Image (cartoon, rainbow, N blue to C red; front, side, top):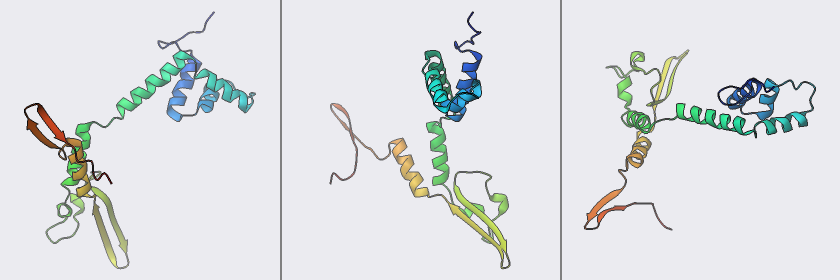
Length: 169
């Protein structure tokens, strides 16, 4: 009698090994996590682990879970443009009070525009240091992403796009 299988065609042990492998990236550790391998030699564990992840339903499930993880963590173009725009618009004066001192109330909790925030106390007093990310690099990256660095020309045959790819030398 065959063991119970889930909706992906995996046994409980296979499913456990797949979940561990996708999370940790080590086939042998995933095999040891799911199967009783205490008395096995390392070479046997490695071979069995490799063989396990060659089984078509197991390999397919690993691939599907990896794709799900990649999709969930994907940064959209709009999100990237928003972050780069915040960096490009960053200005140190946004974080200062009327007397030119850093105003802690104006500091972001995790914004993309500040590269470094340091407030330290010493015998000489409180030292405050802010460093804004490079807005020029952000603007250059925005220009590439939005196609602003391309020249468009119209002629009777349609649209001509001239790309400046740098020096050929």
